Image (cartoon, rainbow, N blue to C red; front, side, top):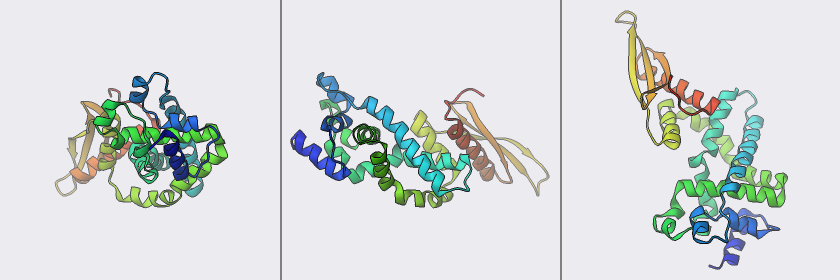
Length: 238
């Protein structure tokens, strides 16, 4: 597939006719390719911009759809939709892996199927459409991607437990899973209250109480999960 035919096919998948196709080509150019072809420009700067634009559009969609949800819930919903795993269905629908420009090493190690490579390219595509077509056009495109998923995010989030959510978040950010410890047991034998602490590499992320070890761990996981999302902070010693 030639570059021109590939770009034309990707434009058709996006339903966007670019004024400057070079922007689209840049959006699918991985840094491994530009390392081997110094005349090319990779998609990392577009990815940076696209991440912010995508977050703004999805935030507005959630704000409009769920007027009674507080900030913490909306932040959690947004994270589900725009983090790496949330972008993979979009990449799959666009058949994005087929259009990536990869270096030889990245190609040989399965770069066309790597979640990080695909999700970064989705963000770069958002920025390329924004620069080429303006905010109204990119907003229309993103709304099309997320319209149905915005309706489903509440139900899917309600059915997921916080220990699972926290593990997915820390695996995504830190490539490690949290651990739990019961730090206190209070009350009479027929009405115990357990306190759990959740840690990552020995760093305290949060604590919670419950009438069983499991519920205490879930409470601690919820505190840690919402704290990391609400403040978008790095893990620091507590």
